[in-house]
Image (tube, rainbow, N blue to C red; front, side):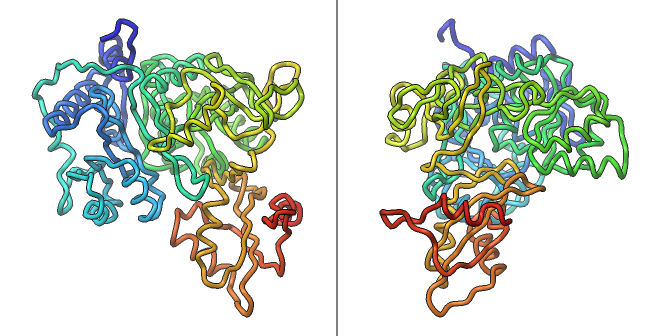
Length: 507
């Protein structure tokens, strides 16, 4: 093994030595110290090896957050397996696509998702066995998570390098299909170090982990706090009341925020006040009014903003009040440049595509060599987002490139092309353009501007529910409008800019 190597499991082993009795994972009534966590990871790793899992094999997870979710990540890191977490808000057809694309040998299913996984396991040839997660019971056709634990060869060493694959996170469907972003163990440790440096994390920190562990934000903050020797309080899902209670009970010091999380917490706090003085850091996005209100309850909190994506987490960051409206300055582990459509650098103040190099940049898209090559052209990762630098070095987000237009309701990524593809399968719809519009609750909402076929009628709510039945409900339009014609460009394509101009401000 290389003397320069450092993996996620090395961090787990280090913490067991340095902070053996400090809390690592807290989930409901379960409390695992760093020593306990390593022991669980070792036992699961031994069981996976006994099953026949080898380096590079994928382990699928369709579940809400739990202590066992984190243990799977730790065990996979030890033996070099690759975790395939599936967005549990997906419809069965979307889950099927991700599992087929990642071809896992084992799949772990939470109790709410056993029926979906059970049906899919019969259709996906790669799946050899299914296990429950987040419950001590086993459904028909499933084994219990505990049954996979083994004490055999628990101390065995594995030749796993930092650049080996660790997790495949499927991003939003840029061209109507999700793409699996493969991140290495080194990517995760680099992201961790960036967050440790930015937030000043240490072994006293306690993260209220309410974002899903299938999401890069939820995963990266959890591993960063673990890397620092701190504790993660794992929440199955976000609930404002329980989040507030856990902050008070466990003296939580940080959490990640996407609209409408903060607003919901504020409303619940005003019903049932509690002690939030332990909170030091809140990262993410929100309206300034919500931030100001929350500071009344948590006066020590500092709000952080930034720019990043699954493929390159932590491109830039800074305190929200440093340069309000900006995404902060480039992160210490990221080289950031802005290029025009000809891959020429643009001057300060001019917009250009945000491109990045650094150890946090992902390995590439799973089974999509051409997409990876295009994204990495000329030695830079091209994010598909447009930004500009000011003279003080702050990065300002401008918009998404047309080829990668993106809508972000509540922090989720939704590509218009995916929603349009579903809408066009409806028998009554002739043409459609899907755009993002401002929304006070979710930050941004999805709006579908449709032209129906001759003689057809269609209630807007029926179309909304039709979309929700085909793909994850957070991807459905919040509003549908019907028009007689859609504007076109000179080449006959729908003119999306005109659609935005005509309908973007009318939500």
